[in-house]
Image 1 (cartoon, helix red, strand yellow):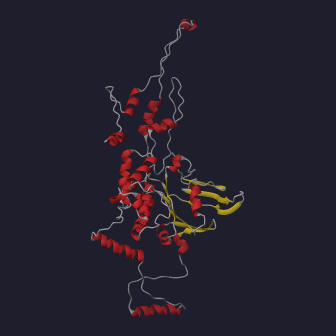
Image 2 (cartoon, one colour):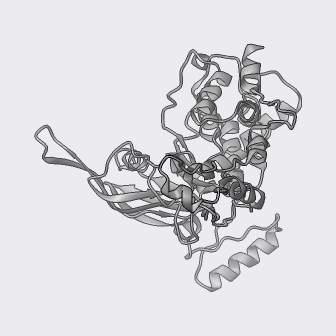
Image 3 (cartoon, one colour):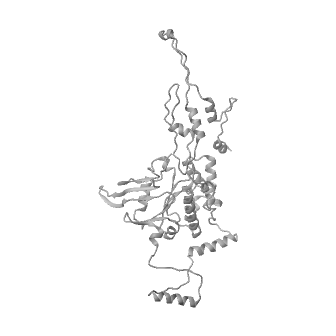
Length: 416
């Protein structure tokens, strides 16, 4: 299991550079040049820039879909080529590459099987995700009949099917209606509160401003500026005062005070954001139970995503495969099963004890007769190592009466 330390970044690039050569192998286009990203765990980072600035190229290098010309990229403290790391990453590309003849449930079933999720876990997560993205009533519709916004919803669901620690989202709200956009933004904030990290690429700057902790603006393959949203957008040369409606006398006094300091006071009534106004009207219509053929309102964070962050603990069989066991007669085997405690880890003393019992080997040798030792025709019989049957029975579910109880839930459900 890959464990991040306190000083590690969720994403880190060191002088990351990508140069696309021409037909003759000569350097032609510098897509990304000396990019140094440091994205902390549990934050939403807005990766911005105009078309052709190198954002998608950077994402492909992070995902090991492109090899950098120079520099290195690290994800969750290692390389995305490591299966243990790639299993902790969820990716939503700019275009949802989904099989149009599969239904929404079949699509999530397909991706759940890719990650090797057990049958019961997979089915529970599918229903949770469909409800969360507002597609519970359309789970049996083919993806080819979905609008672009609905396809983005199911794309986000597939990016979350493996309960990732890092989400890389490229234009996640593209094509969504304002209700869906607001819902997704609230979802991103809740996911980060539960220990996840999000790298967000979007041309919708209002969405980025609402949810991102830090942003970086790329142009010509180079990082132009980087910082928190507040420190980059704060206008320190102006003062804004918002109060309830004042009388004309009070407003006149404020103008006089501003004039005494040589300033001009601008007074105007504040305006609501169009997004907020739109959401208010649609929410009121939904409360009246009006019918719609579009996506429903999602349920928000629920199910497996609502749990507090915990590390996926290793099973006993995983430890048996990874442990380096060197057995010697009349000596206990030393097995290193030390597990670094992280915010997502918990002690597994019972598993360690069971592993140690299983790895112990007891050898009982018959005493050697000196006379028989010199006689080559009388070989000494050596007892075989005693098998810890009680431990093996506990692992495979064998009962004391010699019967073995093995269930195959996935096979039974398929036969039904």
